Image (spheres, rainbow, N blue to C red):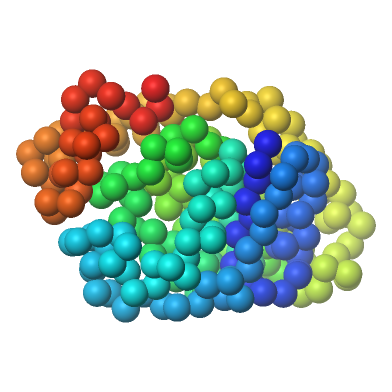
Length: 230
């Protein structure tokens, strides 16, 4: 199994360690990135990725190592500590750059066969909304199976996380890893994803939101009988 981890922060804190524990438990080949170290250019709102093509983004080349690893992976792990009840700015920025990959535009067919995990931690609260930030993008990319791990670690340092909370972390990681391994190579989109895809298919059949979008769906055969999960 190939796993890519995209960390929403440079330092190796609690969120990073939980992601690493999960990747180690899953096994296989792991590729890891840290934001903003591995990608730091902020979206400037030029809309070139939407209206023309993804490679017209001024930051296109800098994203490619992460996107290539993500497309080739079986498993995507997104990690972010809670920042004011949401993901870190570097993680939000990376997800902002992938708007053109949403089903409403030009989703990648590879995404419809993957599993993913959203991992967040905080000294107190905010894990649910932080994980949702990441889960939203994963769903709209087409990823059919998304798990979430949110832990209140009651600490700002991994070394001082209590044994009781570490036990809770181990249990969550073990449970999630077991599900991932069981579903590896077997995941297919559910009713929600297929339903949203069908609505987008109708939209693209009528011209879509842009000419590049409609042309992409036509070339992929999705406005006909083909589907990305078949």
